[in-house]
Image 1 (cartoon, each protein chain N blue to C red):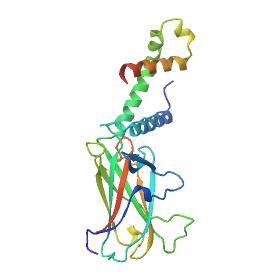
Image 2: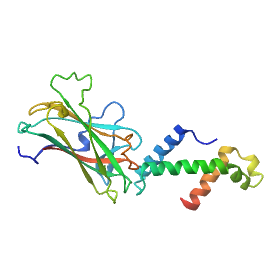
Image 3: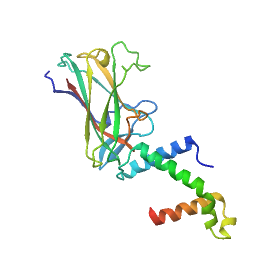
Image 4: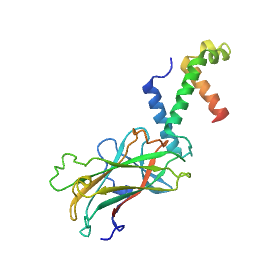
Length: 163
Length: 81
């Protein structure tokens, strides 16, 4: 698959929330969103299988489409961790360390921001290759000093793209 | 007594959740909002006695502290909320 091509995409209704500290399902103008709190770390988890046409040449880029519930300024720190399903005991979590990026809220609450996080192949992707079942964990790192945005961040969609 | 650090932190989080739920545009950062919470709590700590004195008798003596606090909140919200 060529660089820049979309491999997978997930919406809020695809979330498999963890037992605690989960992003909350909500709607905005009847559009499903996942609310990520501003005061504590919250997570959403999506699972899938890496398409066979993923080349594993460089890695993947995660694109996060989100809006602010109310803020018109400030930054959100997003973190992405992958967990390869092969060999993983499903009674426990085995996500690779978060790779993070900051995204700035749009000046109009309700207009989306897209934040990109690149994961290089290998350890950052927990060695996920084509055909592997995997889980992707998205977190708002609300306790990070760089996370300055007041109020919830609302996830609209998340895409996995060949880097 | 002023709110504790934990109480201020919880209040800060609660205000942000309310603003998010009501989708009211907010143009300040988390730290700036927290500074406003701290400043208002400090102001109330400093001026609690003066506010109490502003309440005429017999309300000042008859109402509980909690009732007077709600009275202040109601009047403030009606004027500015």
